Amino acid sequence: MHVTLVFILAGFVTIWLLCVGLVWHLRVNRAGALKGDATAARKVILPMFEPVLIVLSVVNGIYVVFLVVTLATGFYDTSVPPLVLETFYSGNQFMFVFVLVLMFQKSLSLPAIRRSVVISLVLSSYNVLYVYLTVTFGDRKSFLRQLEAVRSPLMAPFVYAFVWPPSRATKRTIRELCAVTLTYFMLTVVLMILIVNPKTAHAAQSIVYVMLTWVALCPLVIWRVFKADTEYWRGMGQQACVLQHLFQRQNRLRERISSKGLH
Image (cartoon, rainbow, N blue to C red; front, side, top):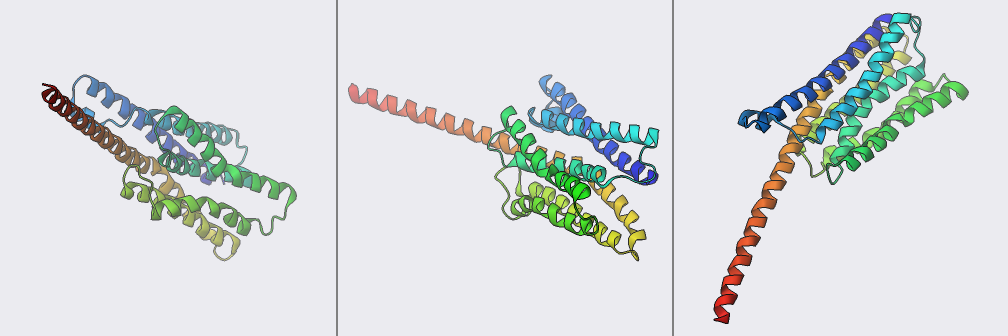
């Protein structure tokens, strides 16, 4: 179990480093853009995405601190309670859910980000409550089989977004996010199938490593969504400027015609 916790820690550290690195990348390019660097300006994403990356960094930072303390004290060297393992799963799902919920918002503002955080916390943590109630009061024999059934409703928004992507970012990047999330969920299903069968339980460790590697790279997928969404809002801004210019020209034209008519 100690080795598994080390791999879980490595996954959260990788995610945290990528999130922090993306925040640094955003700030460096924004500073360059303000100085007139055209190359840096093309790399900058919208400033409102910085709080989103900071939220993801804080969430993963909490897991990193918890795992470092746990490994240093040897608290879970023998076994890890199901409730703790489920919080790890929920923490990983929070990132995917948070970004998807944000893509369904009609604006990119602080209220929209706060609303997305609350919705994402509820959607990604309801399974933790189920695990707590089952471990405390329920039957542990059918626990693993029921757990996947409890987790599965969370995939419904991703299936919906894959088929009917929201009008944000691009259809391709949103579908990539959904595909990554659904693949991660399917890996957890395979893991549970292997665990419940004593003959295949030894192969479960390999699936765990694949899952951790898969989810550790999710910030790069999230960054692609943010870049695409930045281009979406830039395009909306350019269209607004074109329409405003067109309306101004039409208004000036009407004024000239009416003045001639008066004379």
